[in-house]
Image (cartoon, rainbow, N blue to C red; front, side, top):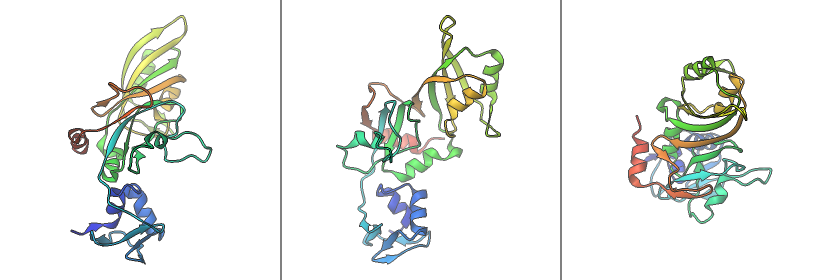
Length: 238
């Protein structure tokens, strides 16, 4: 059965489908020894596919739930030599990459996969995957600030979607508050910038839930593979 070239590359865990498309256009992909730059090209199982001169092999698809520690980069490598999420998966015989990102100083739930189709689905804005964060902030939220966060605040001139907010703890003496914020967008530094928009700095931030998944039974730096049922549910969200 013929499949689109970019899909085959993504399913082999080489890159996401979007990145695979860029690689094809850039002339980094060969099929049966010939450079292919046309998107939509279809290939068969028998075809030999090379990316940057390296043959790809079809891998079985795997997705892991990872408890990312603070002080770790959400990428495959780092030019500053800092530890990355991929470093925790040395014993896994698959080429994994993160689904989205968590900031260097943010801990919590991060999915790692070699399933490009699943990654693209989860990261696409239209699917509105809910993400639950817990933040320790300086100061305490006023009623008008809570209203702003739950109705959308402006970041770079654009209004965020309404968030759900729950106050978990308030310490007036030490002047801090711990809140739970649920969003379904994934803009750069979004939670921190939303809180900055209402004049509150974030001391600590963790992502505790992604869709229906949570960190139960895991400690920082640990991971587990998702069951086939969990993967199915992720693929059929909404």
